[in-house]
Length: 107
Image (cartoon, rainbow, N blue to C red):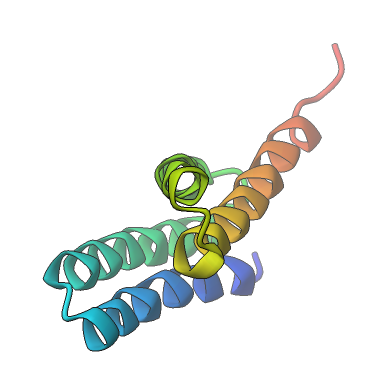
């Protein structure tokens, strides 16, 4: 039962991104969504730290972020911040998908 530092780092990354969005553009929506998603991801990181097979919260939030921010990146063409968040969220999502296949026992 080790601490899932990558998941905690991702949670902090999303929360700090929301704060930067507020500071740079004055966007209260960026602040709110960043802090809410960061908090949910921190809870998911806590869950995976307690039990590595309990990754569904982080997987789900990563999928939502990858989809929403990937769509924003596709239509805007701007890497910052949408492309960066979409890329990191996709990497985290793939990490948990890989974990789900690694946890399956052959029958």
